[in-house]
Length: 81
Image (cartoon, rainbow, N blue to C red; front, side):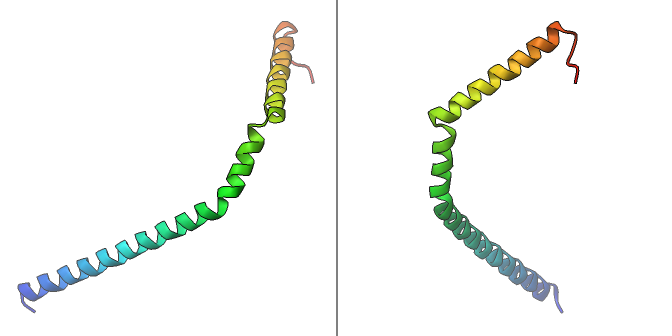
């Protein structure tokens, strides 16, 4: 096999690998788009729930509770469980 034939064979293999990689990228992008389309309603529902006034009130209450416990611990030389 001459060096020219070897070079052509290498170029063919590179082109084949490149084509396969491009096809895989296209397939994965299509799969990602499909997953985004399927999950969009659920994501919107969860976002709505997590930003609802009830949830925000819970977050605020939780933060105040943690602050109260930490303040109590600071002035009583730590937590005793």
